[in-house]
Image (cartoon, rainbow, N blue to C red):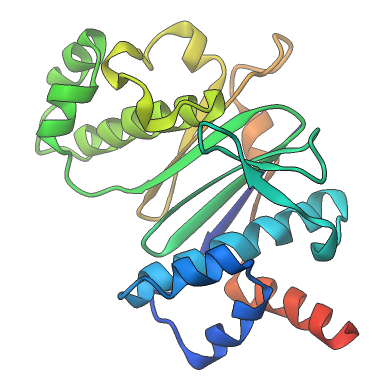
Length: 231
């Protein structure tokens, strides 16, 4: 089972946003107030609230029943429900979350211009060869750059190794990774998911898309307002 949740967000941080800080654990509250830019504060706040909201939507788990921690490799996990897996990614203006019954990884990036320095140090030989065949001025070049990059991130996040991995040793063009992943574009954002699927899953990847839902900031805030009203 895999559920994918998408949340476009504004990059401003208002007094209205600030009232929801009371739902943050102490360490995240402190982290939020270490940021200078509104967009970073907004990501910090809504990333946590969004995970809680997604777990409620998927498993009907109350916010008060959720206990989070991090493994030695810094990967977050759910202490209160160890058989439930989740992964989160955010960039300026967008958050995405994957919820599953087994380890998964998700990554999102804004699709802008490709970064040659990343290709030099983080792409495998096969990936470098593939991207060199594309016109650098084309939309396809930038899309495929971010597809490869987000797949690497999603794959290592699923493993729990993250940035400690030598990315140049990962070949996202391999059948193994291609058969267990999916990349799509939502507006200006490129999103990749890595999840070990069964052999019975169709090759058109409808298993990923059919389990994807989009929400708005107000959906998240209304959920937490309802909790506050109950208390």
